[in-house]
Length: 387
Image (cartoon, rainbow, N blue to C red; front, side, top):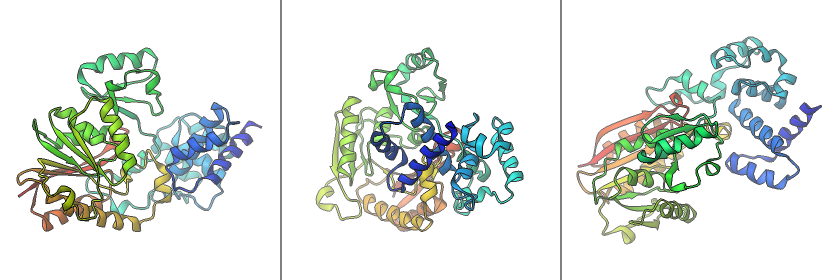
């Protein structure tokens, strides 16, 4: 039976994964090593493994296949062979809203608790609707692109011409189904940047001026640097990261976007960097801090599944240390933009409170961007002015 083929493929993928690599990267490697899997096999195996991790540790006493059937029921509106096989009672409820699905699941499995999916609710930042956030963990977020305002109608039309459902969220933002093959539809990659909607919203707090000199100190592959440049093309940028490979990716993205006025440096922000930065004074610093990433777990449910609570405190120490080390290079009266993709109060409001007590900073504004309302990641941003 085909269902047993699906089950076997899922079990093999699950047995091969230990959580050390992001799941999407692991699947790329796995599928290359198992070339006998056709496109349909790969698609179903990917769906099943992502659904499985979205259940977190709920109903842990059940076997893997029964848990998979339950998870796939909660996460999808079309019935899979595994759910039909191992949880047949769910078939009549497959297209219902998530609230009704959860109620039905509880009637069949009284031991099911949403708190077991995400056991960290007590640590959520202020203002998060706990139930809405927990429900969002069963939904794959959209793919978002930032487009030049002048090109948005053209880009949108190209997607519509291929039958892809596209939503215009702002003058510069389009939302697409996750997995959309952008490069097959838009051949000029200069027209857009892939960037989560909430990440784009943090740009409202930057407020760069022409000819400002900004430091993106945890730049990774440059998403925030590209965003600030889109807001003010005449801004000058120093992008740094501890990982040379990330800066290599950043340089490629900058060149592709036509950005020339930038510097990049490999810098460990936990060290004393006076020899590298002793003469630098910045008009603004972007600190997109290393964090738990809990606001992105709807997109990366494997991170939720493998996360251990003690790691929050480790990230908090890192965030505080980095902020203390970079603020001295900021000009008085200028902003430090502190950001995380976390939903945990310890990494967000409590770090801001620490910075206000310990450093010559004044809070101008802060926000928890509730991405779960837009099928996006959730992020935290604070604009702090050096006194």
